[in-house]
Length: 161
Image (tube, rainbow, N blue to C red; front, top):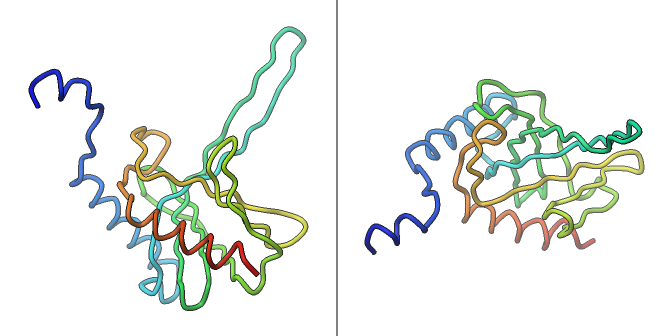
């Protein structure tokens, strides 16, 4: 491949770091979700964008929320656990059972997100990618196969009633 091939290839995934973070995700998830081992996991995140307008200054500010997303095909359940990029802790889980949600769909624009409306009063949009390099904002984990499996599960089980 040569020097220039490696130079223009882009960043490479540190699989040792990724695997260590996948184990941390599993430990946190299992700690707060009963029978957590029955769920497969991916990392996801959610965004909260607030807009501001101060005369000549216009803009927006985005807050990122990191999520450990677990899914169980047999029970058709998704469990979302908030966490932080370094996986030093997590919050309380929220369950989304297929039989109990109002609607769900995959939104492709402006970002690729899995959107779940548990009722008429709220929703969650889960953004997920196979790998994100920015460790200050996102959990560093490679999840190409897991994300493909979650996408299939979500589109086949959650978006159809």
